[in-house]
Length: 284
Length: 141
Image: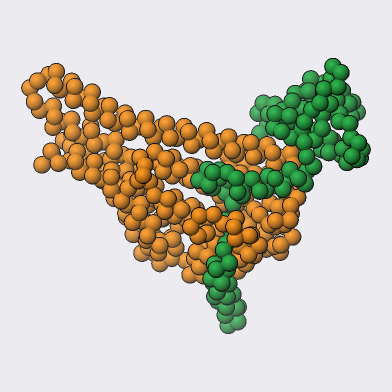
């Protein structure tokens, strides 16, 4: 029975790293429970990594049953090499993505600190008529607003926008996005799916919208979304579709049924623990 | 961050020096001949204790960031703002929205909204109408 476990783990790695993200990106109803859905996405990614790391070590007890000590040593080395390669690929992607993002953020922060007017603590106002609002995450975080957005939005809607950005910064959504960007980059081409990254990004926005609703109500949040969506030129919207219609639809649909969150959490638990259980089984 | 090194203070100075250069350039009009480190230093001598070498460092950093340009004038450098504040702001806005590699941009800076196409606007309005009518009916009873 144990001899299948390494293969199951390898299969599970493929499943969690490649098949599951594609399927999950299609389960749009889970967007109504963004927090639970994000936990599920993380669990699946971590589960995939664990399975990929564990496949070779799980094969060891099996291979070591033979009598040839030289052969055994070679197998141990081989298994270690496979796991190390997986880990090295991840760390290397993490290093590259992290360096790139930190560089963009700190360059941008320094620039904004010079050219923008300073409002409260970490709020910066760019003197420009195009309405825009964003945050620069990191240890020295900033919320950046344009004069255009101040002019376009009444106070309650502006509060909603700032609450949205504050939620990103406070809950460190940047780390979440960074993690998924790293996984996306570490998974060998051409398999990583852009749909997965789009979905995660959308969920993060939906989660921040919730914070905006808590501060300013759903009406002000929805109106802010519409005003800002309408004021930006269409060509600025890159890629396949934008998040605005989905997010406003989510606001209109209201809070999710509990069963959705429960399903997402159950799936998360399964994806995370299955590789560990399999590894333990292989060694007992 | 009270315990941090000179970095935030330098950033603060960069802004003040840049603002000074912008003001000087605006005041002098088209014939602005730039400012030397000495001139910038003199400008601040009354209000803050800033070392001459610090001003030199700040201007050097600003030059590295392409925010100022410089011309040789005898043994000194004359510094000019590379562009007006408005032009730099417009450039920055454009760059954050369009120029960066998409995946990196979206993970590095979190925008409130990534815009919408004209087709999507109708969907948006329909969803808003739903929320408005719900908010209205909640208030009425």
